[in-house]
Length: 112
Ligand code: SF4
Ligand code: F3S
Image (cartoon, rainbow, N blue to C red; front, side):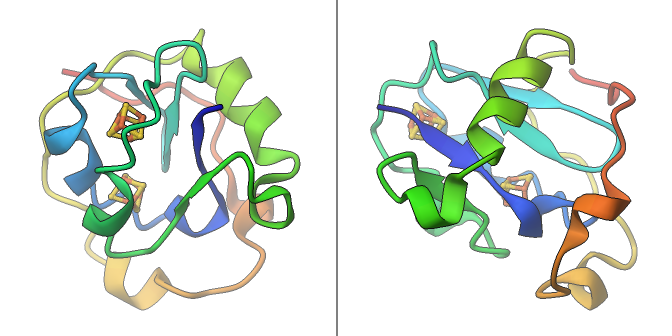
């Protein structure tokens, strides 16, 4: 099992999650983060920290579906991130906007 970052992280990217992960398994893309499924220890402490409520267990297949594959793919490409930076200016405005996959940015983020 692993936890998975999903749709609503895109363009919100609050980064509160990285501050609490005990195994530092978040990786940063241009406008969202992902969790490395092989590194996550399923503690669940990141879930309530996310203001966008974007993190779900992979057992919730309705919420995670294709996002698990996306997390697995980009966790191997993007840089690790363990410290929160300033979120995007319009993060709150983007929180809850549906179907953000079309806005997905595959480029790597800054990382730590
Ligand atoms: Fe990290 Fe735990 Fe969240 Fe997995 S569930 S990403 S180990 S904080
Ligand atoms: Fe994304 Fe939520 Fe973390 S918006 S960056 S999963 S705190």
